[in-house]
Image 1 (tube, rainbow, N blue to C red):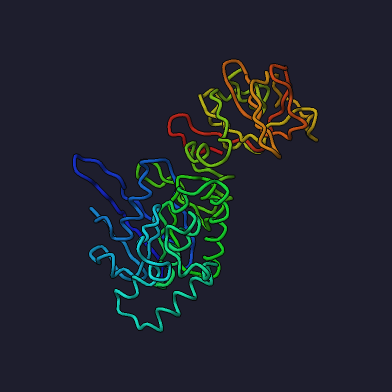
Image 2: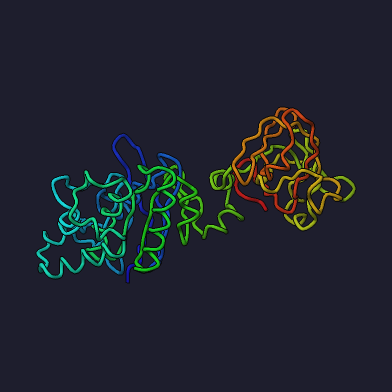
Length: 368
């Protein structure tokens, strides 16, 4: 068993700074979980608490069925891969990967067998005689991962391991780490500030903010059903558009009015949204759910259109991010390059109101 369970874990530093605020987290045996959030949200501190590199102020941490609060890092049967590779420059790749096993006095034949097996998995068997200075950044990162694999730990911990790599290599390495998890079937906890890494790698994603968990769910649920405005804005590229306004009732229909928009809400949302009539509210909609009215099948719908001005176009290859102005408000739509309007032209766009999200203005929690 390699479950990792945190119960009401708090980490408080001197001068009253609380980095982790009583979080509860249950990671299943063999699961790949990503901790993600902006700088200072407590994700790396949480990982270091699990590793034993930080002491818990209060609460309990279990690895398997063992309480590990007072267990030193070397006895927790975990392996950690850091942002910096932390390789010994005077040692070969083989010696770097074998070093931890030698300290634990494993037999030489077992050490060789484990190192060669890990090197085979990572495709670095031909590099075993080289030293770190002779390796590329991606090869060094594979060695750091290999050093963790040879220990055959209960849990792998990754602390932003790809942040020093270039964009193309990051894509390659995150695929390899995911493939490695599928092969080893070992519990992995991965920390990153990059929401693309979080969404593409995790079986489940834990979004943190100011030391508190905002949502812990599978990537699709986090994207399609965010728990609050922070999660909705943090997950997704480009970020979700937000409009402040009011719910207005007109002839037994409900509309969102704000930022020069007057949009009819779908009837499926009425049971929840009607209690917010005449109240301030926040509407959110993703870039892919705003369309040029001439290119969608539901363009005949009324009540969800708006005339806007094209402000900026960002070509992204297969898509373009098109920024529009509505009054003083700027928002973005994702469009095919050949459909993007010209800058400063007036365009009529349609909002897919079946895809919008509404958030309470005071609590910022999701209403629907």
